[in-house]
Structure formats: C-alpha cells, structure tokens
Image (cartoon, rainbow, N blue to C red):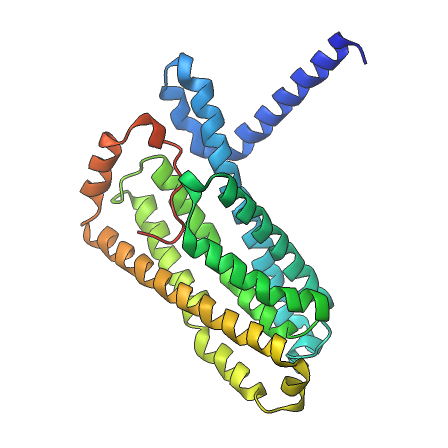
Length: 276
C-alpha cells in the first residue's frame, strides 16, 4: 500500500471514530463547544476517553441484567436445580460479565491515579473468584445468575457520573430524579433481594448437591457472596446519604462551589460509582 493510500485510509478511520464518538456521546460532550479552539481537541479526546468506559459499562449492564431476568423467568432447568442445573445460558451470561470485569480491572490498573478504587478491585476479584467455578465446573448456575440482577442499577450510577462530569448542580431536576431512581433500583436489586437469596443458599446446606460441590467451591461461593453483600451495603449507605443531601438541598451549593474552584485538569477525572 503506497503512502498516499495509507494516509487516506488512516484519515477515514479517524473521521469514522470521531463520528461514532460524537453520535453516542453527544449529550455529554456539548460542553466542549464552550472551550477555546486551541484546547477544544485536547479536552474532546480526554472527555471521550473517560466517557467511553461508562458507555461500555451501561451497555454491559443492560445486556447482562436483562438476560439475567430472562433466565430467572424462563430457564426451568436452572430454577429446578439451583446447584447443578443446566448452566448453558448462565455460563454465557457469566462469561460476558467476566470479560467486562477483566477489562475494567485493566482500565483501573492503567489509570489508577484517576480511576483507582480499592472497593472496585475487591468487588471485581471476589466476583471473578466465584464465577471461575461457574465457568470451569458449571456449578451453582441459579445463584451465579441471581447475583447478576444487581447490574440493573449500573446505568443510573453511570448517568450520575455524566451529570457530575458536566458539572450539573445537585439541585437540577434531572440529577434529583436520577439520584432517586438510582437509590430505589440499587436497593431493590442489591439489598432487598438479600433475604430471599440467602434463604435459598441456606436451603441447600446439608443436601447431597451441596456436599457434591466440594470445599473449594463452597468456600468460593459463600465467601464471595458475603464480601459482595458487605460492599453493596456500604455503597447503599453512601447512596442513601447522597440522595438525602440532594433531596434536602444540602449538597447543591457545595457542588457548585467545587465546580468553580476545580482546575482544568479535574474536568475528566473519574468519579467513583458509589460515592456521594
């Protein structure tokens, strides 16, 4: 391929990537038009770089969460035997999640100064530890799939990040509505389901199916679930506290003042998913 042809192809790829980014991230990138032309492209690239992982996270959450509901409602084999039922569809759903978790861990490692969060690392490692048994041995399909229902809260969490990245005041109507929806959905899919989930877990104790798992799978299952539920409880507390501040108007002025005082380097800083 000659130089001119290569250059034209490269130029076309750049235009295509820019078009895709503008199409899917336009609502979150309008602020770039307010910047001087000299820094427009730098800020545009930085904002796209931190926005794309959030878009990927939302798409992953919707795919996995809806697939999870389908399996819970229609997969009779998994529901009939939660420990050793046919894991085919569940393994596909879990494989998608494991791929995303590995991607997110690499992203965190490469951008630890701006995206690093020890809670997320613990969450991802605990999930991968347990899901490894599901993928390699096909065990606990019902329980593995049930845990994935928690992903349905992620789109609201990501939308919160976009509002903060664009410096929306916490008193803004859209921020308040999203915050309330996030708190309600997070509670429903991560906290309210705990009693029924653990009741199902305890119901398997002492059964032949449970003994057949072996000590390794038993420890991975129970320990990872305890760790994930502790993290979810901590995040629920933080979300509830933040939601209360938004509703009562205690956080709006603080955010506005913080936005005015922030430096330009903070415009693309990662905001933790579950902090207020």
